[in-house]
Amino acid sequence: MLAISAVVVVAAGAFAGAQLKQDVQQRAEIQKRREETTEEKLTRLNNYRAGLVFQKQRLEAKIAELSEKA
Image (cartoon, rainbow, N blue to C red; front, side):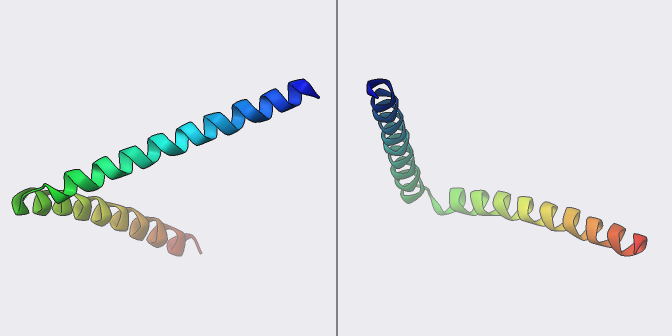
């Protein structure tokens, strides 16, 4: 029983630590974005858009391929 309790405590601690690290990283990312210049924001958003366009093209190609098979 003691071993199970120890495992639960360790797992809870690991989860809490991971959550804390993620929160710190998110806050740092938010602060970084607040400090971006307009040009940097445009570059970041254009890069994000390019990734979305690429995904869209891949999905459209898959849909077309599946439509041909059907």
